[in-house]
Image (cartoon, rainbow, N blue to C red; front, side, top):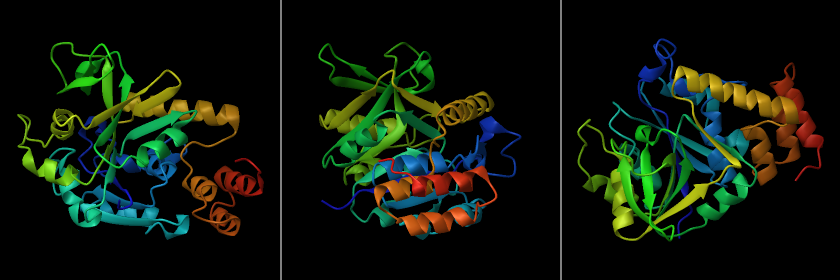
Length: 294
């Protein structure tokens, strides 16, 4: 099987965050001490995915390139593509077709943050699956805001619904999707929804109908945050600040993850730390280079 490649969807106008996003992509806004895009990027890195495509707007693409480069500094390969207008999450798979070149994919939304003990192991295990689709589900109090999944008495997924008007389930499907190589073909088969978008739920539904949709339920030990509104952006920053201040360990630090994963060596980590040498971030990288933490 071809090695799985990652996709970060960081396009859109970010209208829910106006006026903050009138001149800049929401995925470049800070979530406490790091740009928002670092969080989905690091989620894919934790899954040991090293080839990633960032899909954004024509206006914002140069800013993402300036921030992230080609990924070489982290032992990775980053590429870029443009989404001309917001046309649904599933469109990301179609845009990414040349990049994927027949490989399976992991698609993550650029404003999604995942955290929890054992998240690395869960992501690596999921990345190793070779067939079908795997999504992560999270219990929410307001399922009408999300695509949701319904289970039968045996815990088998039987239905997926996009933003249901009537109650279906409290299990929301998060913005991280692992697909096999069929995903692009399935995305091309769907038609725009009533709101004019290619819904990712329609792709998941095709996998479900083929009995090829696996759902991993994230329990209370995990946090899933969507930083797409003013309140959620603030809450996400407060969450990250609380964890980092208490532990002295950072969430979504690409340099550290690259080092822990063996993408870069200790010398490269210290080299990267030099550009931040007058900041707490740089001091943190030096401490990690000198640490024996696994």
